[in-house]
Length: 284
Image 1 (cartoon, rainbow, N blue to C red):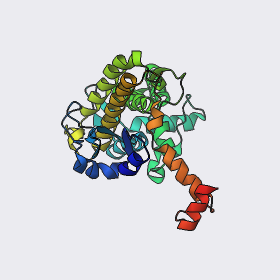
Image 2 (image 1 turned 90 degrees about the vertical axis):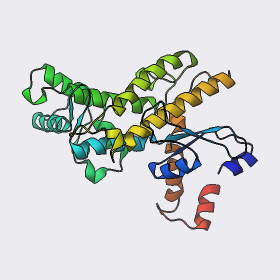
Image 3 (image 1 turned 180 degrees about the horizontal axis):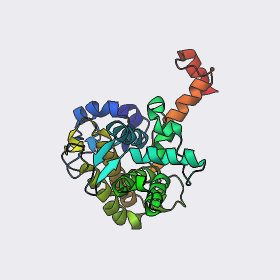
Image 4 (image 1 turned 90 degrees about the horizontal axis):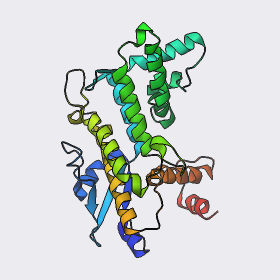
């Protein structure tokens, strides 16, 4: 892929891929599963031109993996306390009982996520600030079921903020959805790195570090994406003064997935188009 791009005069500064490519990236020279954020090597050297090609694991997959980890284990630990899946279940059950929602999109598909584990929207709806706010509100109102929810709320907010940062689309976005500007890059660096360090401090119910467990991928995925995007944007601002801001959604894998979906849709959503069908879909 890199060589044809070079022949066409395209400089590839980063590659966005899924977790299935981690072993390949390590063969190329990346060091993804390091013991801390600092020691992650998030790039490999271009085989011909010798510059750094940064690697990003798709944030949508990391969001789903974070949801899957908490949904399967039911309980994690942070320095704040216990992170518990059942707070989301309790919120859903209460909303169903009251037949109203506390300004969130929590539904049965979010709770029974195993049946919809490939759909990003359900992971995004449950690990969302609106869910965290609802849980915290119910604790502040004195609802006994939501007592000691602080660690869970913190976890949800941090995952939500990381995903928002890695998914900024609007030049006028606010908060963590705000674009990266040259003048706010140092502040973003500090804030986002603190959140990644929080992930590295997560533990399971037996006090084993999550970043050393079999469910570590979402931690390293977020860390890798954050580190790469921050370094890419710093380089872009330094090398090219014409950039006013950077929208992180531009690094997403969504664009190629949308293209593939349109190609499939050209022939009745055929998942396996032949060469003739593929060429017809591309040219029309």
